[in-house]
Length: 283
Image (cartoon, rainbow, N blue to C red; front, side, top):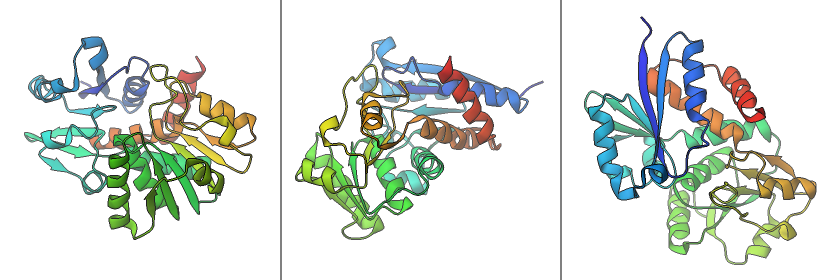
């Protein structure tokens, strides 16, 4: 009899997520089974205040783990018993494993972004980078960016205090001067080697783009963590300017690869999951 893992994803507006399909197909390829459910706060007409009850319900129903997405990656922290070192340093969780009566939080967004970046933009200049977004995903991506060797990361967020808190956390972890809050956006973008969108802007639910096309130039590389749609308005505008671009697809796959390993203790095939993701997005 095949081993069965019961998993779920909690977030808002997640009906287009490809995470369930990636997990379920890879499990089949490895000879067991994933039952993966979307727990969409929008569809359930619930607010984030329902998060404690949803975690308790998942535990009681025998879930093996949950993925956590916008806007719950930081809100879930006080509801957990343990955090991995990365999750604690980043201050955000996207993967919760239920084990021996404990809820253990991990962050595979950071490792997923790093793996995708090394694969998609392996020789990109990293002296100065501007990142838009300092929320749950932004915290993970910022830590990954500095881990990849970004010299100075300039943070832009609608919540200035949140950006300042993240910059302070990054400087404490990676060294003074490695991160700062943006003062003059045009000046920061003009001096940057690359730009990262770590906001939900560009998703069908959140139309728009973090940086206007008028600020882009051919020398920039542009990375977006949004993957539905795969070609966001930001990436389309960047391509038109001659920028090198990296979609959110790679991060989506590699974070799922790492989460799969945490849920099951088995190593999935990243190449197979990338190929499956390509099939899903081509359909």
